[in-house]
Image 1: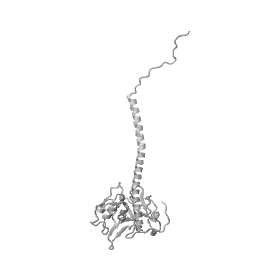
Image 2: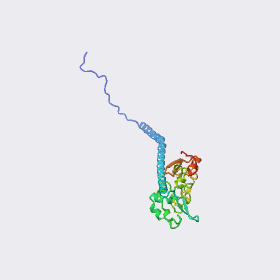
Image 3: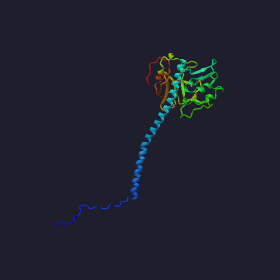
Image 4: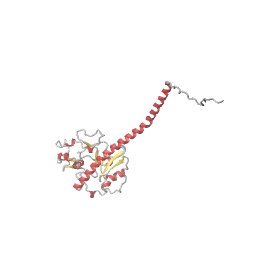
Length: 257
């Protein structure tokens, strides 16, 4: 028998009014918090390492810029005087007068400070004392708290190579037979800072760089070559290579870092 109305095969049902229990909500929330905590646990060391690397690279860039400014000043001094500055100057009687970092001040936009210094009197003479208490920004790094000595003088975080910057005499290019690109002129150091005006601010690089030496930067030191190039070296650098790079006329074969 035919019917005017057909019974639908599927009938639409009303949605269930489902309300999760408090226990279910608690489990869901606990799972989410666990997932977030796990991500923090796994990725925090990675982020911290990235931040440390970023900070170290920024610090290296600052110190490298400082050394580059000193390298340019040393080179300009050499161009004007046909020799690099003496590492330290002394009177005929042996009284210490001034340092190499004082000599290059006019070539570092510090002519005003340089002109106030009485070069005929020692750096720590009362007449000069106030001048050497002034901080020269490119002689220090901003993350070190040691910028003033116990007796009030402004410090330097860089030390000259005493094998190149000699006492009372500056070396000419012709005397640097190992080549300016193979001869260290200055390095950064991590402790035992001296005042930038102190004529004693000189050392052999081997006495500053080494696995047992404190550094400004993790793992090594920045070195300034006499041609103005700046390079980072590991504090585990081979001692013979460091020695060869320190001597201006040692006759050693060219060393590649």
